[in-house]
Length: 479
Image: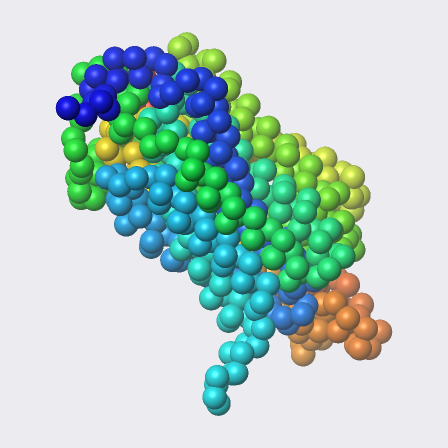
């Protein structure tokens, strides 16, 4: 007879205390946070090095949006669902180990992106870099669904929103470290070195994860009497999701937040470079790091506050981030319209703290309204929607709108033949005085106007979070 307790027997205490001792649960949660931080370090590094990399590659804002968004998100989302289904019945720690090692290696390879000639075929550096980014996306697809499923089995329902809020800090902490480390390295050694330095350590993290994190019994923290099935098909899981209106309004709200957030963060360093003349390192350390830290605190605070209010206000996990996303709008409008750098920095920090609570909400609601066997698939379907429409299209939308507005402005200023490439980096010095004057207006303002318009959309996402409150109490499986 096996000495391993069944999930049914373990749940008698598991739904109260969780899996393992409290110190070990804290270690596992911290390990998963480190993995998630790496996820967003490697994902966000491209935006950090953009002020130096983009002029070297000579690409448009639209192409940069494709590189940071859709090129990464397409296979990330396509691969995510089958990996999540695999995680429903296989060892989740092993899946994460392999995926962390893969995306870390592909991140390092981004630093080698250069023009390649194969026979008579020449492949530009942009396409090589895009291929590496696709590889990063494939690896990162195996992070969040199994991690969320693990957290749900380690932590009981009463502690889950705080645990998931802590885990969600990886989004902003990853962005913060990408800026804090990647920015100065870019200024000192070039953008390629930043990919090597931040990519390679992930392989060591993958090994430590496999050696130290245990796979818990599936459904360990579910209350006694919870109906458990050995496995479910994707169709069965999707039918369960379809029956939960709160799941869908939560997903729509999080998708809009992702569309705005990923788009803005992808172009924020370029905005600071064009509007205030900051280098990659200066934009990263002076502005982006404090803003990311504020966002991390906002995500954690939302999970903590919602947990404290849950008994009296069960829908707090939805309405707190809903109001937060609405409140962030005027601060983003201020940040992207001011001519004072310190005002921009403060406004970005306040906006980040206010809006990033949605990260704790999207995972807590997405996990809380479905049964244990559907948690990984729930997360994967949500991430499919969020990343394909949000991460995939957000940066592309801002880049395309920026290029459209640039062309409109240069036409209006009588410089129809002026290109974006001619306005960037050292290329501007070769222009006539009049054309340099056009660049000083059209180059920063086109991106600025694109960011201002996108910021307004946060209010719509906030409204959908408030709408989630209508069905949330009824839909919740775990109380």
